[in-house]
Structures are given as structure tokens and as C-alpha cells.
Length: 210
Picture 1: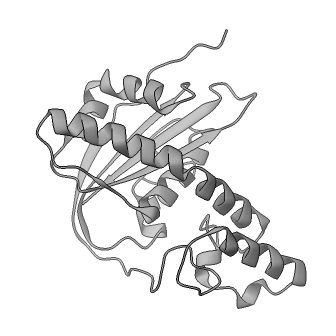
Picture 2 (picture 1 turned 30 degrees about the vertical axis):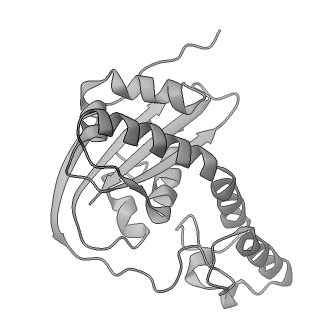
């Protein structure tokens, strides 16, 4: 029987004042230029790869921000789009919790969700707030062209296969709980990846931002 454990590291909130970042023009994830972020953008990446014309793709095609435009980006984007209902459910449960403590609701942000989704993949191999390249977890926000911000926070967890189970883990951990009800934050990003035959199976991330 697989053992479900609490989040592996203490959540923390870091004040990041007056940090400048240039926000990419246009709609996030809009590869084909139609003004929307949808499965058609995944198709655009796949078609360009098959024709050997990835250089003509917009920078949004590098969805995993590894400096390349390839099948991994198409797969990452397709998984991201399919998980949006899960992101919405996590938002709903976080805002219900916040409401019970008098905190304003958070809004879901696609860029933050992409950042959280990348972090979810990273914690498969390193369940830590330090990234696999040993940089701080908040460097992921710079990769996704976040605007100037004042506060950022991250929660990570592994072992639970659904939103409710993961929320229980975080609610029962003081640092993670404080992040979820903090009035410092206005936006939420959610990431999750399910990887059978790994130690925990499911890996979850929340990114908080204001």
C-alpha cells in the first residue's frame, strides 16, 4: 500500500521588493497568434516540428522554458490544458478556506500555473524548494515573465492523488496553511503531475503571488 505523506518541506513566503521583469506581449501560450490559448496552439507546435520550421514559432512555443521548441513543449502544453479543471478545483478550495478566515479570494493565473506545473515536474527528482539546478524556487517566476511583484510563496506536496487530499496535507502543516490564507497574495498558480512507478506517484505545487 502506498503511503501518503505530508508536504516534504516547510512552506515559506519571501518578500521580493522592486524586482523588475518584462511581461511578454500578447496572450500567454498563444503560439498561433489567434489571441487565444488552446489545443490549437499545441497543434501549431506539432505541425511546425513535423515541417522542421520551429524557428518561426513565437517564444510562447518554448512552454517549458528550456530554450528549445520541441515535442516536450507540445506535451507539456497539452498536459497543462487538460489539467485546467484541476487547477480550478484547487482555486475553489483555497478560496473557500480563505473566506473562512476573512481573506480576499485569489485569482488563478495561467503564467503562475505554468510556473507551478514546471516546478511540479522538478520536484519529482528533488522534493525541495531549491530547484534541481540549485537555484531558488522563485527563479521560475522570472522564466515565465512575471511582472513586478512584492510577495511570492510556494507550497509543495507529494503522495496524494487528488485536490482534497493535497489540501488536507497543506492545511495540517502550519507554514503551508499560512501561505494559503495570507493576505499578502492576490494570485494563485497550481501545478500537478502524476507519474506512476515513482516513489510518491503524484506531485503538487502552489505558487502565490502579488
